[in-house]
Image (cartoon, rainbow, N blue to C red; front, side, top):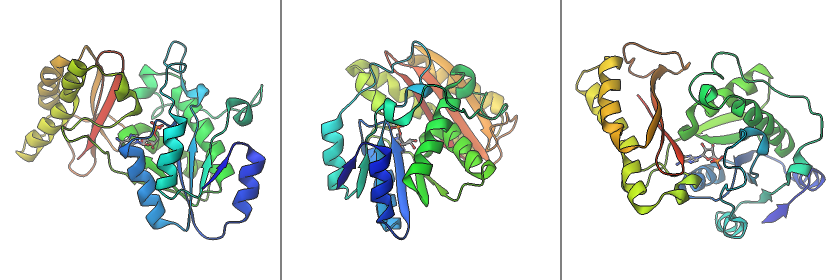
Length: 274
Ligand code: AMP
């Protein structure tokens, strides 16, 4: 595995590659969620590039940029074992100039739910993903459904900017009790880890309600807010279509149920596609 830290090194390494390039951008502290993306990309492409970069422009003032878990050594080993060809680990100085041209998230889809709670987050996320897709030369880029709105906005960006890359959605990976894996789960203390299960439990119960014929968004949301009592603070429960527009009635095959809540130190998100 080649580890590269500069744009020039990556561009030189990329020139040697012919055929499909699978790419997975990450912020590191890799877990089985990331690994599932890496494995899928390994199977589906001739070459595999992973990036690890904790992108400052997608963190808001007061968020956990400094405290974000960093595990470079372990991450390098994981990537080696997963047969990554090139691991790109740039610094902020490599990625950004002082006064940059910026990308703005779309006014509607980019400013509901996560975009409303974290204004500016998606602008920074799209900015770095655009850079990483360009410099990696990815033909196929893999993103988790865990960050559902992020996935939708990246798909839209590649379409709006006529970018020649396939965006591949990947299923959410959970631990054996249902908690969606996240690098931020390391912040959870033991009792909080227990309480954090209320997110996936609420989503599971919502599916059961839908499967038994209950399609009323109001009723499902009410059940979920009761189920989420174990969280310290619920930021939103949302039932939307795949365009992130609010629904009154669940549309089978076109609905995403999303939740964001604080449990102890971390802010957790989870969702379910129906
Ligand atoms: P991050 O390092 O958190 O920025 O995540 C990098 C990529 O991994 C994103 O596309 C995430 O959606 C994806 N990802 C993170 N957690 C999971 C998970 N539990 N299951 C599937 N994909 C995930």
